[in-house]
Length: 221
Image 1 (cartoon, rainbow, N blue to C red):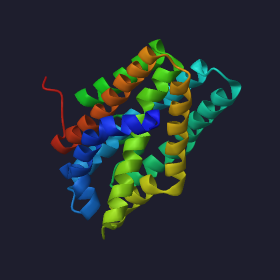
Image 2: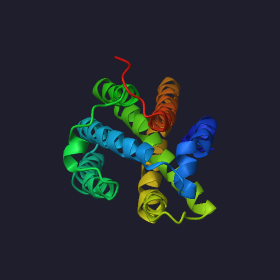
Image 3: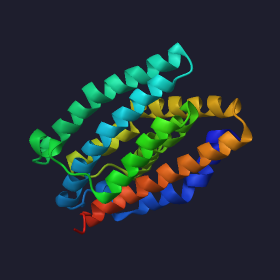
Image 4: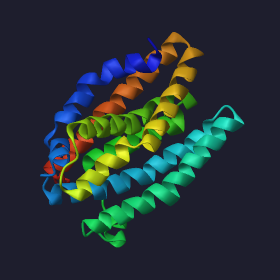
């Protein structure tokens, strides 16, 4: 069993909980209340900004020029393609670019992004890969499960499913999994256990992010 196969087993209950969450179920059958999805879109935009920082710090930590270049490309792709697409997608739900930029991070978004940036700032290259992997892998896993269930009639939610179940996104996920396996193969046992803990923490934050959108979480004071 590969290292990432064992991580997948560790995270199975988390990703099953995500798949069964009413936010994700509502995307899958096209019935999700749009206010909840608008909340998710705005918070995800805030998340993407710090996700870009993760790629930048990963490039700085990369042990080889090849990996440095890959992370630099991921940063550029996220900044100049994915975030543009996110703005266009948000516009389909009536959210302006100004509203995206003005979004205040929710408590969960703040906690998750602070965790990721702290790992990237103080940890190793392997730590960074372990912490970022659950985001893309979890979305790919969810997208593929929903695709298997059949696309909803609501085209905007169908597009979300197509995006995260696409061959391109699956290839990116597989690349990151292979990278994690390569790093783990040359790491000490203590390092692998740290990667496992970071991976599971991020996976749990992924669930909390969905749940916060369902509750439309706000700061209490």
